[in-house]
Picture 1: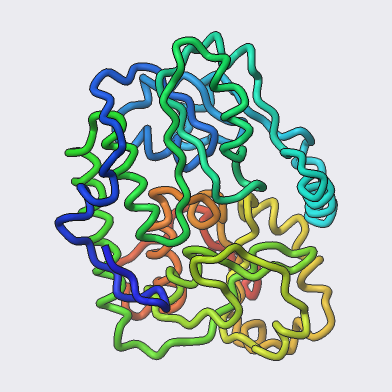
Picture 2 (picture 1 turned 60 degrees about the vertical axis):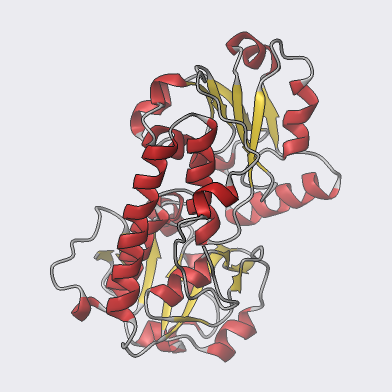
Length: 339
């Protein structure tokens, strides 16, 4: 695969499957898999290995059938009862002290006897860091293999599907899945390539305001837009409200990390009550949307391709006359209802 510096130019090369997973041990007899991030759970399930999935995190909810699996990792505080500002303050407090915001049920993990653990190093907020898992690995008998995923852009996410496929003896199926995703990505990019590209701001957190990072500017680009504050292939970061007002984007996508539409709407006043909100071009044009972030944007998993199609439709509905938005995936703040 090759991606240019601005996130465009995605293409799947025939050597990707061998290059990217070279050195990853092939496990022909993986029978007990534990994942420590929702996107890995989705990949494992997509490969047809849900029956081998013996442990997940408290955030793993897709496909819905995985919710009955044992939870080996959960947050140290209950974010469901906290505002975005309270969550941000708590996370910063833990991270600055070198503490993990997640805890692992060591006894349960030992009893599950996994032979493969899939974890992530990308984000301390979204997943248990590899070092937390490593502390426990030495105590597990037999010692499992550990596959750490660190995707920074969309191509990395697709490569992770191949890596998990290799590690679980499902490489042929993984290649089929990635090629189908490639087809869908290319279809969107081709259709949007000649369209007028509006300025877009993807807001990843409301209080404080965070711009988007990693794959999000890439998705916007493929969907026929230009992300004005996002950081391609880099972590999201705080931005000032003055920066947002200065950029005055034509479209705003509220994609709060870990928040579905309903939860975002419960705190939307943290955004819409800000001075200058009603004067923004996106608001005046009726082009401010709340999107289902954990399903289609904040997780580094297969449904990012769905998210791309959703975004492309919202930016250029005239180019996708037969497309039907996924249920509860997008809410228009102008119309006050789901699109």
